[in-house]
Amino acid sequence: MVAAALAFATRGRLLEATIIITLCALFDVLDGTVARRSNKSSTFGAFLDSTLDRVADGALLGGLAVFYAINPRHSNMVMVVVCLAGLIGAYLTSYIRARAEALGLDAKVGMVQRPERIVLLSAPQAFFGLVFNGVVLGLIVVFLTITAWITVVQRMVFVYQQTNARADAPPLPLTTEKSFWLRRRRPTGTRP
Image (cartoon, rainbow, N blue to C red; front, side, top):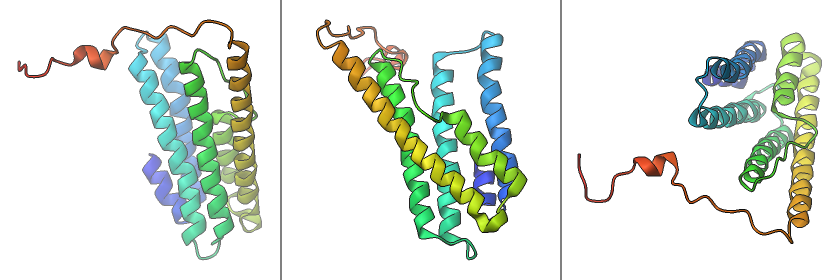
């Protein structure tokens, strides 16, 4: 679905791309809920969901960058750079949170989370498309890029403050238990 949305977006058919992205976002919200309610959630499922979220983020903002790069009517190199900066900001936002969680911290601080980013990119496009010569879309992308980087700074400051507050505390214990993937590995040189 993400590839289809990317194909539509790069050709300037934002309404179709928006409908597909909205469906993807709906399924993204529902899959975790369904897994939890049916008692079929798993650590790998959560990992896979998070990984696919990054794919969707990359396709969405990357697709907009390609749109601004190749669309003859809306070609704008400044917006290509803004989309790429937004993509990096979105990835850093997620990375900082994941890394903080690995350190035992909960870094859910920040201005705009992923659901808000998806809604801001999809809902206005469903209603307005490229009205006003694409200014609405451009303003939304600029807003999301700025707020992504503000969130990056907020999360970095939060982690810095939390780690400095624990500077006198003993370090967090490292787990000695092998991960699922390492437990499944056979010793070198053995065959079934």
